[in-house]
Structure formats: C-alpha cells, structure tokens
Image (cartoon, rainbow over all chains, first blue to last red; front, side, top):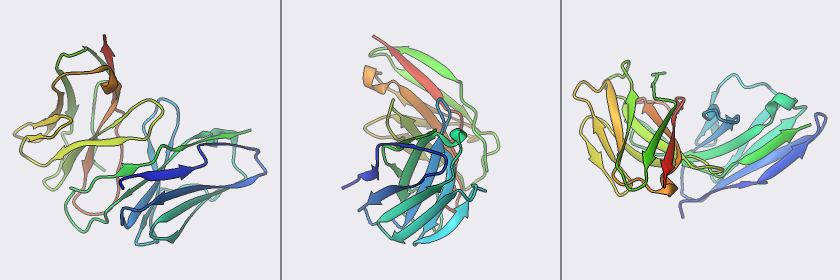
Length: 116
Length: 110
C-alpha cells in the first residue's frame, strides 16, 4: 500500500472557525510533511515530523498547529485563519533520512481549503 | 537550500520525446537530483532521481551533466497523460527538507 490519504477533500470555513485536516499513511514511514500550495505555484514546505516529533517549522503562523499522534497519522489544526490562507494543503510521507538523498516522498491528493 | 532553475513551460507533440532541462549550478557533492511531477488536481508524484550517473526507470530517463550543474528529464514518448508540472529538486545529504522549484508546465499536443 503506497497511498497517503487526506480528509476532507474540500473544506470551507469562516475566519472564526476551528477545523482540522487529517492525513494517514500505512507504509511505515516515520517522516511526515505538510505543504501549502497556492494556485499555479509550487508546494511550500510548512512542517516536518520525524519519529512523531516536530523537526522543521518553516516559520508558519501559529494559527496553523500540527500534530502527529502516532506514526501513521498527521493532523493540521486550523484556527482563526485568513482568506489568504485559502490553498491546497498537501500531506506527504517518506522514510527518515540519516544520510544520502535517495528517499522519495509520497503525496496525498490534498485538501482544498477555502477561508471566507 | 540549493536552487533549481527550469523553464516555465514547454510543449511537445504526442508520441514525441520530451527533454525537460534543469539548471542547478549551486549543487553540492552530496545533493541528489530528484524529479517529481504534479498532474492536474493531484498531489506530486515521484518520477526519478540520481546522483552522478544517468538513470532509467519505467517512467523516464535522467541525464546528468558531467559537472552536475544541470540535468535533463527525458520522456521517451510523450502521451496526453504526461501533461503536468515537472519539478526538479535537490535533496541534501542530511535532513528532511524538501523544497520545490518553480517547475515546468508541460503541454502535450495531440
């Protein structure tokens, strides 16, 4: 099974709402990632978890709160978002690298988020 | 993080070979060259990667210049399903950072 699943596929929320995005993989990968992708732009790295610990935070605003409850699950909690946060949010997973650059990432289909 | 430069867009006729170039003049000795593609309305998917030697797999071939400052992704016979944005990415030897360049949008003409 080489699939990364993301739910929901689409999400519309108001600026005062609290919502969560969910990502799941069963490939035994111990690194998981969140990316944000605006229309016609490349994905931008937001967070990286390695062995369920946050290892990279690319200076993401605190209204985005990641969580990795176990090795298969990754959540992104959303609170008080702005309209400019509307984007496609992609989850990915990979092996944890100790050296070399041979590992590959597996991406989910993304959650299309609209903030009103 | 190392930067890659790609043309914004390219066109190819169906069933013709396609050569997608990538410049990475600041590549370091331990950087691997990865290619991913993103089909419309989907997440990116892995295509191929290499370090120094040319590589082939079922999807494509990767030709790496001798000085490693550039590489070319080769699709041997473009199909309509190959229409996508192709990203050239350098993976550092340590850490889990993964930064996409601007990518090349490939249009395949029937």
